[in-house]
Length: 216
Ligand SMILES: *[C@@H]1O[C@H](CO)[C@@H](O)[C@H](O)[C@H]1NC(C)=O
Image 1 (cartoon, helix red, strand yellow):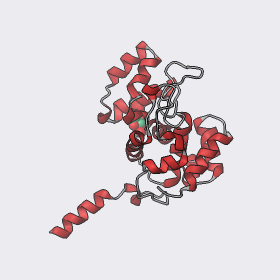
Image 2: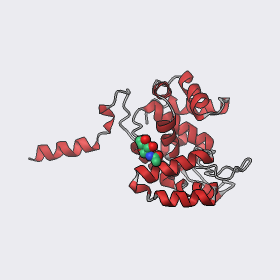
Image 3: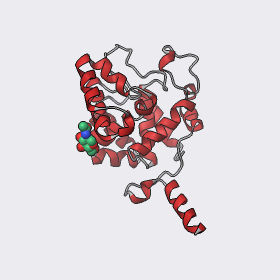
Image 4: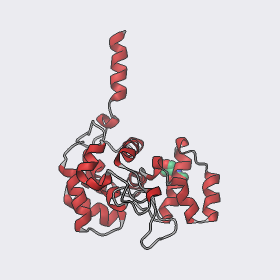
């Protein structure tokens, strides 16, 4: 009786990656200390130009772990790449809205463009009851404008999850394999062929710092 109960608890605690084909499965969650090693300036918000948008690592990390779970990202290479992307795009969690040059409706922690924020809001409304969004609400925001659409998804719970959503819904299997494989070619292909951005030394440096940890 007691053994069986223990087994149930143990199974629930295990990540579902045991059943997925992508090795290796990362069994421990990301910790604030890991992020602080990758980008030491992510610890504090005291220097933030937009304090209302800034999140410390302590605040951000639980939401990033929730995002990995929500989108079934269980291998270390993919987790590290998503973390590197959002660290870079949000200037170490200092921003969640585009300020340079200031594209209306561009934001979340991976600085998604307005068209994708609309798709994301629609996806959440249709597929995640815990988003609290309805399709009608998304339609109304869409009619008002991109800033209103961004506001629907730019909270801690979903603003830290948009990079994972984008990967899962917009990138193909080859991109996913490249990230899981922890190769620099895989990282480059992700940025160029799926995110649609350029590879820079600065971006790759963050990815290298993250992947150098080998595990959380
Ligand atoms: C809900 O999720 C499914 C599976 O990912 C997807 O095909 C569908 O487009 C989503 N719904 C919306 C409205 O985005």
